Amino acid sequence: MIMDEPADSVMVSEEIKKGLLYAALGFMFVLVNINLQFDTKSINIIPDFIGFILLYLSLGYLGNYAADKGYLKWIAMVLTVCTAALWIFGLVSDADIYPVRSGLSLVKAFFMFVYLGIIAQIAYDYQSVRADTLNMLRYVSAGVEVFLAVLSVFVSLFMAADGRVNPTGAMLVLFGGLVGLAAAVWTMFTLFGVRKEIAQM
Image (tube, rainbow, N blue to C red; front, side):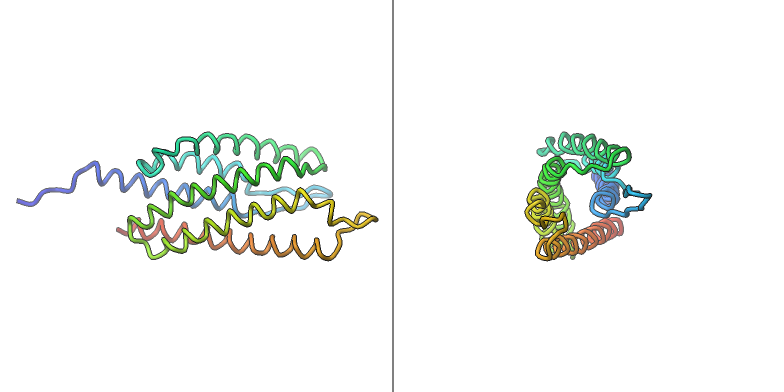
């Protein structure tokens, strides 16, 4: 007599697929910025706070993988509120508050590091060929976030007396931005790839 696969194991698998879809979409919003320029204001049309809402929702579908990391939901909520406030602030003001953005970047780096660790573990358990890549990318993404956060705090050190950015500062910002963009795109496509692999099982 052949036993049917337990319904609860099928349900868990479907829940994880849904969680991974939310995760991939969430990281797309968090990692990639598309800015439109209106007069003196630059507006990100895929704001971070939407991504953090999706990541918050995704945690509810990851079952035991996220069960011992309930604090991630609280961090996701804090990041949602703060990034939404900064996005709205950017609509009404030209001022840039480096210390706040830098502080949020450090929190974001921690969140991404732990969260991507969860997804990497799922990838390993489902024997995804992208598991090692995803595990490596969590270190790269966290490192870039910390680098840019520290750099923004010391941005005044790179300003010349007449207010211009000196070449060294400009090169550091450009380098960090390019590495961050490459890591963001790579991470996003890796997440979609892991989700596709698991969805086909």
